[in-house]
Amino acid sequence: VLQRTTELTPNIPEAWINLAMLHARSNALGLAGETLVKGAETHPRVVQVWLSLGSIQAAAENWEAAAASYEEALELDSANVFAERMVELARVGNWQVLREESANKWPYAERNIVLPMTGAKLPAPRLRSQR
Image (cartoon, rainbow, N blue to C red; front, side, top):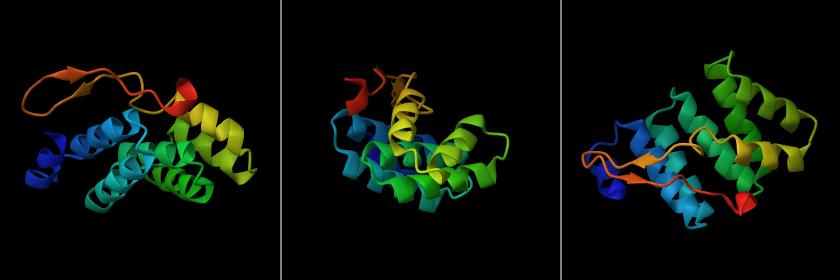
């Protein structure tokens, strides 16, 4: 359903984020990352897309890409405390803490996924570090 939603209405950033969450939930971090890259290309000014992309990249231990995504989010929203903390950790190379904090505070980790048009809810995904 979400894959089709991103195809039919790519202008909804939450659809990209929710689809990535579903991929992450099934430990398909590569697919989750690819989905969020497409979401970032489609919505380059949406902070939550960049934060989610950084968190997925950190979970996949793609540190430089995660740092770049968090920096992009911080550039878009200089008051974003989560992005600021992740950028600080990346700058000093504290990758393990970055990964842990990113997984624990992923912008959508505490929320249920809401499937567009159906209103159906799925439980929030758990990344590998949360299992």
